[in-house]
Image 1: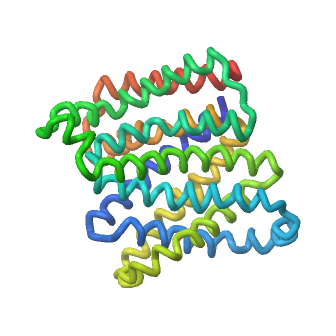
Image 2: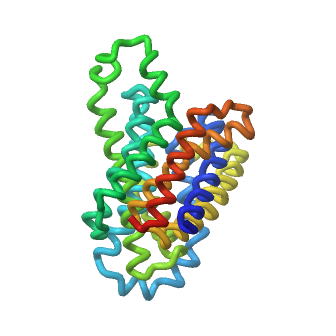
Image 3: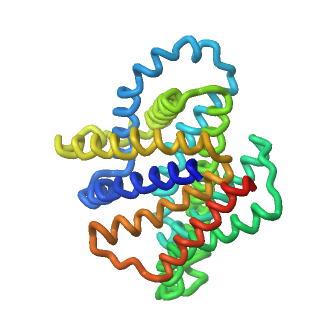
Length: 300
């Protein structure tokens, strides 16, 4: 239960992060710029951890570098950029709904990579959690149903294949980040070492994209201040708490608990932006909590 609570707190901090992130995007700051400076600042912050761990890095197995790349390069950067890009090709509500399949990818990878066993009781309570996650985002389902375009145009228009590929990549990438983060903790890496490697690998993966977008370097000073605040909230505090929780739960249970992020985002919007928290979303949050807690308590 403690591990689930840690992950819920991390989700709450990630939700607070959106109060800064989305206004920045609304002001014309690209997602690439935000992600790049987050990883640049965090790499600098955690450089002291990296240098203190040089002996461990020197003696690391080649597979460990692959794990770090999956966590940082794929999960932290490429999946995020792919998810953002998918909105260009697909209805945003469809992209958000497809993202709810992230736990399915993580559970499959956990079974393969970590040899975590999946029994019928886990499948049942995982399904309850996924239904709860869907109810939290029920407005996206409604917007798809009420869309003025025909269903064929929504799902099968000319740009749809690119959108599906990008969304599926992001879903698998984020699921892989959870699984390989757990793998690194099982290999004896501390939270700080995992975070250090994550952000460094993420920065390396970003460099080719930055070379094609020189506007990344032309933002006013206040933008960097806001990004620095986000770095503290979601990059340092939230990620540390998340990895602390991941140590205490299975990767498959963690992937379900991560679905609390949209629920926490709804609560943040309710508290700070006077958005309505509907009964359906409350039921969804309760189902998600129930499923996650039962899986953790029963060790399914």
